[in-house]
Length: 169
Ligand code: IDP
Image (cartoon, rainbow, N blue to C red; front, top):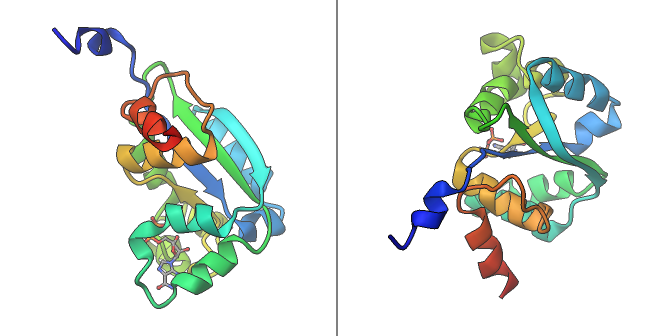
């Protein structure tokens, strides 16, 4: 009975997207946004900002021991990105997975071979300058939302409110 209230609250899936510095620099933003809208993706938040070291290290915390980590942080903080919160339909419709499919494989060359219609194939520069980031799970989405859009409260995201409370303490 304790979580009766929670069960009644609508849970809408939201993903966090970063249009990375390479794509912003090469003027691909509008085309990328058009591709997203064409697929019924709804943009809830859109903000141009130059990411800080701290934000990038948080997004890529799973890569912190990789030899390329410093290079990745330098690239991601080198010039402005566009950070977005997205959803789809009434319930989010699996938007995290769907957007990951839309961006394609991590490496641009692989994306071109395996998923020529993907955003990374179309708009990536080379190798790891791959134009777009998308949350890879609901946990990551909640974490990324909590620090990019801390005032974001509706639609309710599973796990997010709790996480925000934790971060605010
Ligand atoms: P994802 O972006 O497809 O989720 P991750 O493995 O989480 O893939 O890597 C995050 C980002 O780090 C990639 O999008 C890419 O920009 C960069 N990256 C991944 N592997 C390498 C590497 O071997 N060298 C340089 N950058 C890399």
